Length: 330
Image 1 (spheres, one colour):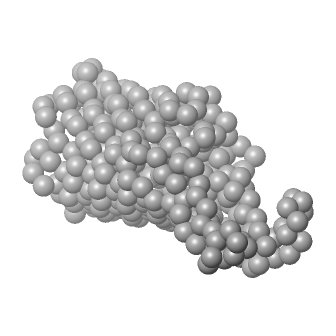
Image 2 (cartoon, rainbow, N blue to C red):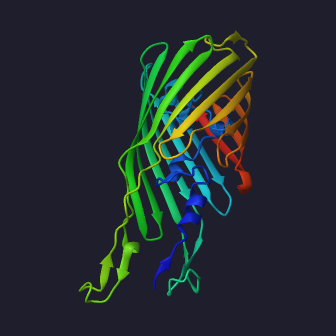
Image 3 (cartoon, rainbow, N blue to C red):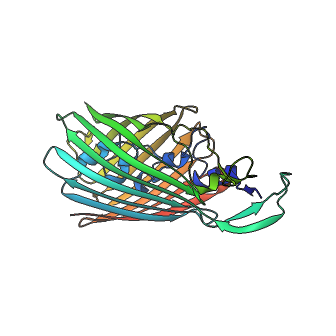
């Protein structure tokens, strides 16, 4: 009896249609962090908190003291996404951080096709797809204009009784050009190819083929979604010393990202954030040259170290998803 798991459906659900490439673990490209999602992912140069280290590990270099952030999102078709991040300033020049990412597909029916006809003729119950990623990050300020960051991640994907796991590296930097302009570059998911393992790859065969009656098959190796990000941020207005226009009440920044996956076409995003009294935040953005991801919108409130954020993101025919997050600086 052959188990049929519709991998195309699984991947489209888990990756939330965020990449059409040919590599494995496409969910590593999922945009995360409420601020980033609200700005349509334009965070390579604009990121400045723990959740932005997903885009560029140098983002944590702006954290003073300690910061923690959590958000949980319910996507379509029972998919849930949880994120937890923590960062600590070790000195005036160094910050370290830890991110934990978890994605749960919800229950998926498992069916059988004994005759290999392509027609489901029975059910074996349900199974889930679990995706887990943990990343440690380190950033350092090298000068008043230049910062660097590095992230090491472990990731694992479980599909029923099969699994795939691997490790990868992120590298990034920020350069303050002056006049309110900042450049950001990052290389993400640089690591070796992966393959699926586990009992789910066992096939029951005649003893003439294998004395145990079990033949362990293997899958080919798959690359992980390696990509390069290039971003630019313009701090048009704000209280920061590098803002183009100094203003104690209002802040406005505009950011643009270009993303080139190694296995797919170039796409990008344009986002903006309006700040009022360094307490209220309004964000918006849009992806371009992307298959499904569209507009993003967000709101934020910061008071006495506590941050509450909301974002709404559009995924074409898949609909829209709202996300809430809470963070604290201490």
